[in-house]
Image 1 (cartoon, rainbow, N blue to C red):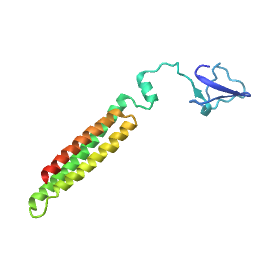
Image 2 (image 1 turned 90 degrees about the vertical axis):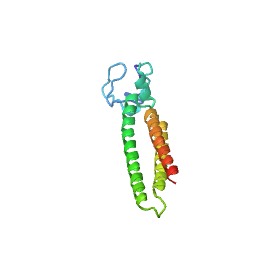
Image 3 (image 1 turned 180 degrees about the vertical axis):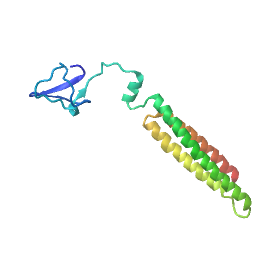
Image 4 (image 1 turned 135 degrees about the vertical axis):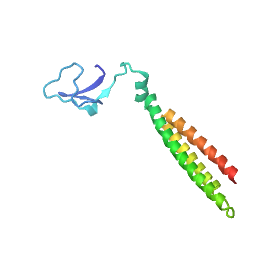
Length: 159
């Protein structure tokens, strides 16, 4: 049957799952008045040889190149978030140096950053792992986790 399981119903040939609405039956000939409905075509092309990247995408896992591209993009976004949190922490520390009477606000901002980074690591990293995006998931967990650990150190040291 050349990769398609067909259902004959009168003169109408319907593939059970397929790609095109006007595909040719396995014998190569179409009868007059015969229509092929693509939503009913069933692909049984297990004999077709595929590469490992095609098998990975077919199984729901994106190609390694696509994963590396997404990981680099998310790494840049993570660095921007961490840099902005460091900037806010720096301003709070500078403001605390001019106000020795009140308790410092910088450790509170550092704990705030810890929660943001740790929550981001859990949500995005684990979410990407669940979606089988292993490389970006590992990058998210490691970069945001390291950022959370560094801010936790700043928060503990500042009190």
